[in-house]
Image (tube, rainbow, N blue to C red; front, side):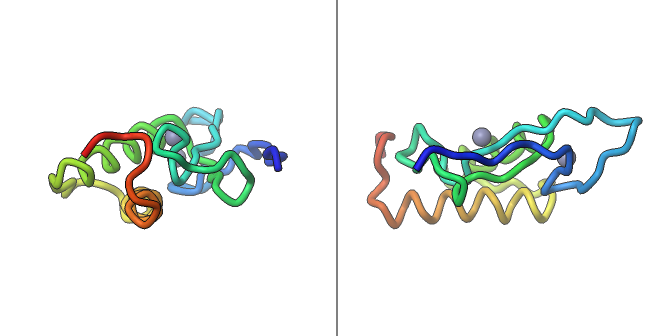
Length: 96
Ligand SMILES: [Zn+2]
Ligand SMILES: [Zn+2]
């Protein structure tokens, strides 16, 4: 089923950013589409652009087997969840 989720402005990583930080949030596919993840509400999480970039960096690091020591706990959690689903599915959409 096509996703119906809409951004509310609350970042899953940092919570409400307030007026000083960018309010624009984005919907991230926990298990990324390019790695075979489904395009559905259950696979979406709302995060700010900064958290979004960080999560994709962490996923890339997990794929390459490199550590991401400075990452936010929630960023690590979301990235790890997507990475694990991708591994469970047999690593579709990306070469070893
Ligand atoms: Zn994303
Ligand atoms: Zn954020």
